[in-house]
Image 1 (cartoon, rainbow, N blue to C red):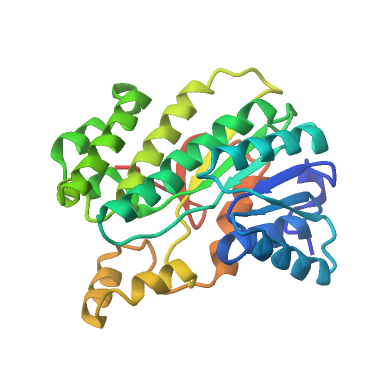
Image 2: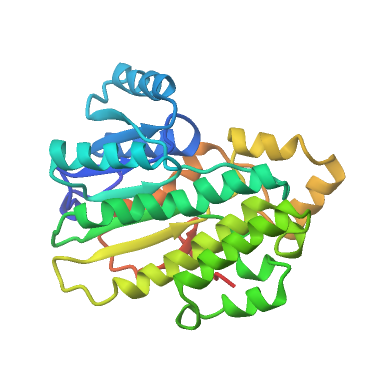
Length: 303
């Protein structure tokens, strides 16, 4: 059954939503929920075989409005191929959900490179490639990005960087890119912890900065051409990413993290609950302000 009242439905089968990294976990559930609402949903995945299998699973549930296309957000050739296909097949898209991400709970150089390539640079490249293809409509196009409380600037170890990221009018993308390069060099030298506790946190802090800048960049688009940017922290979710993290720490440390509210949730939740806020941000007809960070329909601070 649809979660929206019929008078609030601004979308139809002609509405195209793209979800990155969607062959499993939260991304897969977001695709399923959007398909149930009657949109055309493009499920993307880096691994073609896994993406096809996931799409076939949804077709078996009667969701024939889900289609698959391969997309590796860290590969420029894959990105270009996907952008060309979206333009040729659908003449653009209405909703982009940035879900693709990797998790590394350390600052080793190899893992830092992957974190920056996927979580930071890859997310930016997807947005910039598809931004010109977002369709005009009275409801406005949507970019919804799954971020994390881990990337709040207050969690960074570098006092100067933390101060610089307080106000989006006081930094630019050049600073973010330069910081990413400096961080990778620090990780190469074994000094990445000077910036953040791990590469996942650092990559999310930088992508949060970019999304805040993008909000300012798109703020003055006229009615009918609006692009609404919404970002969300899904909580502590039972996904492969969570279990990878859980295997790396002992029980006492884990309980201390939960008690401190580090995850934005005091209990582990399933992907069904985690997908609720992203789907709401994709479909809401309420005039939500752009560029904010949301968790369980409540606004969080970036600081």
